[in-house]
Amino acid sequence: MPIDTTTRTIEIECLRYDPQTDTEPHFSSYQVPFSDDMSVLEGLQYIKDQLDGSLTFRWSCRMAICGSCGQEVNGVPVLSCHTFLRDYFPHKLRIEPLNNFPIIRDLVIDQNDFLDKLESVKPYLVTKLEKPLAAGPHLQTPQQLNRYYAYSQCINCLLCYAACPQYGLNSDFTGPAALALLHRYNADSRDQGWQVRAEVINADAGVWGCTLVGYCSEVCPKAVDPAHAINQNKVNSAMDFFGVLKLMNKGGTE
Amino acid sequence: MKPSSEPIFWMLFGGGGMLSALIGPVLILVTGILVPFGLLLPQDTMSYDRMLAFAQHPLAKLAVLVVISLFMFHGCHRTLHSLHDLGVHTGTGAKVAFYGVATLATLLTAGLLLVIGF
Ligand code: SF4
Ligand code: FES
Image (tube, rainbow over all chains, first blue to last red; front, side, top):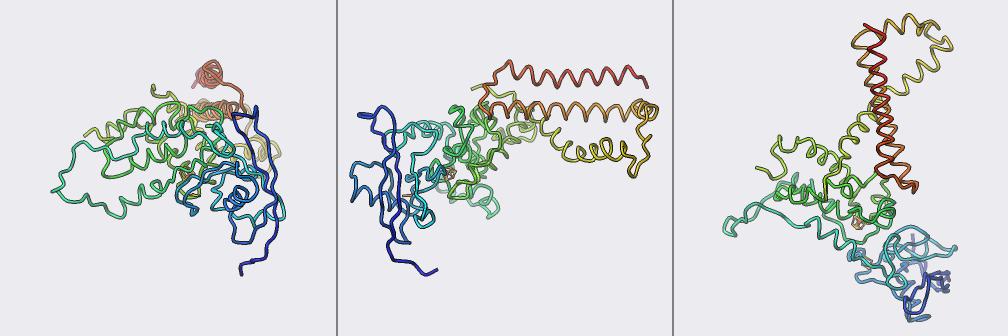
């Protein structure tokens, strides 16, 4: 498709909330001229630069890799740098901060709850013995790499948490991305940390908090498929519960 | 965080789901449509005498018990979780009630299967 460089105008409605002056959030509407190659993030930047410098939102890489520009656009969690204004024209866009998180200001949410959960899954290799440097690199076959590769692509954008109805109902739930990352390390042939992560995985708020709605995987911009990671681990968690994992001498018990 | 007791119910739910997906539609077709309307199978296929004789066979007893029990656990588990999805707060009481119904149905079926003899 040839790029249309003619400028059209689209209406962007933004949620605004300043906890110092507002008692509750409200919407402000802006008319934004745009060309075909402009992302929703660029629309927000236009508003900030030209129309209202007080509009607050997060962004950094503008290429779908830093994970900081997640917003609800017309009720769907998306990366705003990865979504184009042309796809909404001639209708207007309504931009809100990600669902299920407290608002710090305007489109900026408080991620602390997720960061605590991320820490709780020990998202790093847990090994019984430190391998000495002299022993050389720890080689993996392509097959071993494939077992966790997709889950390692997560950029912590939290779209999946905004999409998850279970997290919305009960924020104790460890949630899609943290559980997917938990699985990313459990599935790594270099890792022996099943047991140190078992408490999180086996809890009511762990994999058992998921009812396989699957919307998390649908909105994930990196095809991580957290729903699949979680449901694979319902099997693992059930095997652990009935002692089968120990019998199989899995889970780092050797 | 203590381990969830969910694996027990999830296994029963999963077993029931697998079984109902495999034989549920066929059971409905045979017992609900084909036999009552006399299509393909004669209408007296499921006469009292035949069904009693069927249910008196030990293997048939086991099959009936497994089908009823797992279907009940599957349905109760699904309903319980759907209530939670709809925003109804389901605590321990609801758990006891729902899985209690499934347990009761299992015990009742087992009892009746024994009462009708071998
Ligand atoms: S799993 Fe996907 S949607 Fe969730 S935080 Fe990671 S990249 Fe974002
Ligand atoms: S700005 Fe980095 S992901 Fe969008």
